[in-house]
Image: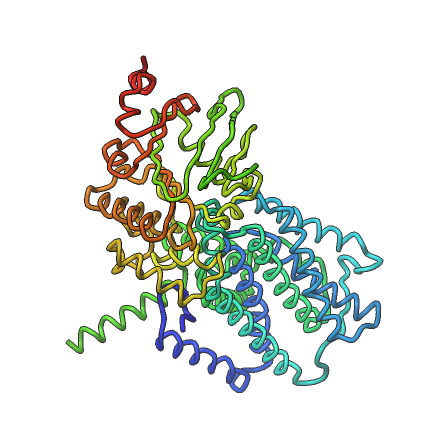
Length: 323
Length: 243
């Protein structure tokens, strides 16, 4: 099973490491207090966003800068349906991925022939439009004051169910990515990223698969956004600030783009660092940005690459000792 | 349009303009099932443009492309592939980040072949052209000749492959790899009935492989026939010598 890196780390080593990490995070609520559980819950929210963005930008090569907007669309859809129209929460959450996937479909269609910088600009413009619309439609969304959202779990000790809920969603997203990347769709997405013209010559309907990647990735972001709203209890246009998108990109790049575990490691690492160095304020973003530049310039495999190299080094040493 | 005898491909008076430049000029070409046709001509004569027109990369300004009696020049590129037409590029284009084997699997997957079947055929083909041991290597690690070979053999993953257009398959390739390419083309033509249109400047190799040759100049077919016939055609000599 190639859980750690789709191309390099495979077999029992990757599986054992993944299971060990999963076991640790499952037992974490027994060791930590409410504060760190919250930190990890938010980290898992970012794992969902980072993993689903990695599917679109990393594997399919569609560098969208609207991923945070899809989370907001999902979040606001569920929140508005529940808060303003009296829908049950589960129905709101169900509607969230549908609305964000529909918007993903529309945006995907509009940006179909765009590449690189043009795609990035178009998707960024879309995200900004979403942010401004949320801010402006005060009567519906309560604008910058924020929309109060009914919580999923109420009362004391609510951190534990949220922790496991987001952990489950994050694990499901990672599993979905593994499944997709092993399926024919995974081959097609990698082919499209490598050379779209040749992919078409090979018989791939690139339009269909690019749109599907947009739908899946935006739908997943929509689910994350919906659960986030019902966890946080308040939604504001801050959710669509460019900083949010920058965070997702930083997490994926630092963790390791185009790997399954990269966005997971990146999201958890960056979220912990963000919380640990909270007193340093915005300077954290500068440090992260510098780290992204360094990784892009010197070592584009990110933290995942380091993990892989360490594992390979251990294997080599073990083999050398056996000889 | 009716399909004539065992005709596989027909281009009818196709014209392709790029602004004021006419790259293909009223070109009509006919290919029969099972033949290996050579397409030669000086640089800029429209050979690659013709390949691009047949495979749907470009749409003709006017005229039509017919495959098995059916007009295909308005079809999307991937649909043309599904008709059973494959092509290679002058500068070999691979999915560089993917392994040699994964490169091979893609055309088989797009026609619905199962993973197991596709892997089996891919390994067979790779073994035949001596790339079998490299199947797990990333394609970017291959040499220029190996990349060209992989690009060619990848096309054979489509089954049935009716027409294969090879654009300069021997350019810059080591003689040993060139022999493997020639052997592969002959084997696929003989055993699977694949029709080939081979664009090349290597006249010796074209002579070895092709019974019929078409010569292009200024976007037009100026001569057709055996190598001996076209070599003695004064229009061909003029076009090559610039007379």
